[in-house]
Length: 572
Image (cartoon, rainbow, N blue to C red; front, side, top):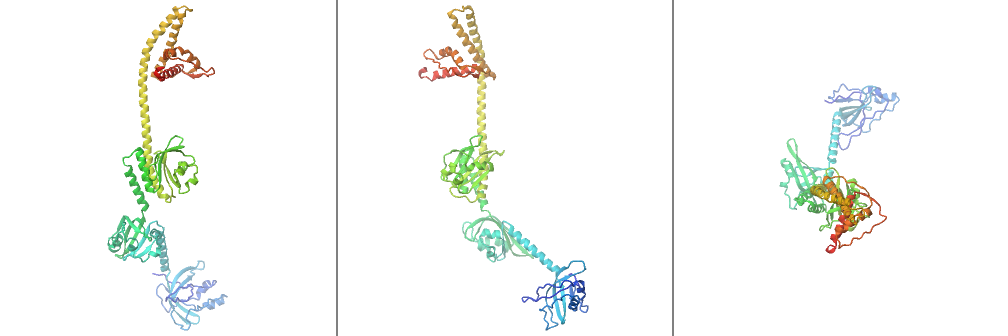
């Protein structure tokens, strides 16, 4: 039930609109009348208005205003004075003062009837429409919020009636279709955007899921279809159609759709990557990967690289696609190239003017590349293993799509590169293990030989020592057992080295003079190479001393002399 209008309400009328029997007007009461103004407005008890209505008069309004020294409101010129009892129908807005201290409150009213009883008296019956006005305002607010929601989404949304005529189109949908939203209103949407299949053949309306949603109330969804733009081109789309039901009656359908062209391109590229690299490893894998990547992005060049040093300042290509075939692998320094910047950033994109931005880069200039896109290849621990790069002779436009596709291919390339490096490290470890096992076997053999040879050497050195004791100090024969004694000592040192090798003993480096060692070994070396070979010593008198194990130095000298003898034609 509407609230009853207060008898303390003040008002004024305005001209009725020419378009309607009711019109809007504002109440306008001069300031200063206050509650004394209200006393001049009386309720007509003789007439009993309905609930929610008020019967008001202005008999003494002008008189009291003049008495209080206030300019009274002028009578509205729109009140027909010729017919004093003519009814008035318009809208009025009332301002009431329930208490002296309260602020004025606004309400909305509608003039139901009115008549002129005297020259300065008007009788009006007003219906309070405050609640109705608030309801309309709330409805307008909700409508505005709903429109804002529909316009803010990135998906296309449009509504159709049962005849497939468009009743609404949001901006995102209109942009995808190449239309302005207002251009689609009232148009048959099947004939406008869904008239043909992907192969260009006609698409009957009876087979259209959107038409079925309008006519039969059947919900429809297609993940792979095409919609047609204003310029005659098509794009891959997925859409859903839902019937609009009002009072158990289908009144149309609402359709949501989105452009999945990039998604489908990525999907096709991923499938081609999987199919092209299935079962491939190593070089064959990388070659297939760069070929598939260049084809998916529509670029001329694609290459995958790995670092050649721990400093990560140089890279070597593992595969290079050149548009019509594979190019030879090459190695280059990263300094001054676009690849250098992406090591820290993780990716790099230069859509044009590549050679002007990086004049020191040799590869782009040699290939005639104008644009560049690259990403680092990281292992599971986040360590950069290499680079995946694409270049083209024309500018690149689709950075977001190209980068997303590069990441997909890069993840696969990084996994294969990590596997390749792990396999190489495993092979190196296995080679080291085999070498260690060989050396261990050699050490065991050397230890056994050294032990047996040491027993024989004891006899030689023992008898040479006895000869030196029995010979006179001035005897010319003493030089023979003396040489035997020296050779025995050197043989004993060699045996100690063999034993040290077999037992993994540490060497004993000392400061030695190489000239003295070579001179002392002259006779031994001369007999070692044979009498038919001349041995000449050329020594540097200013040669500095070295710190090394004497036994190892002697062994090195003997090995060098024997190798030189063996390298001579006919052995000397």
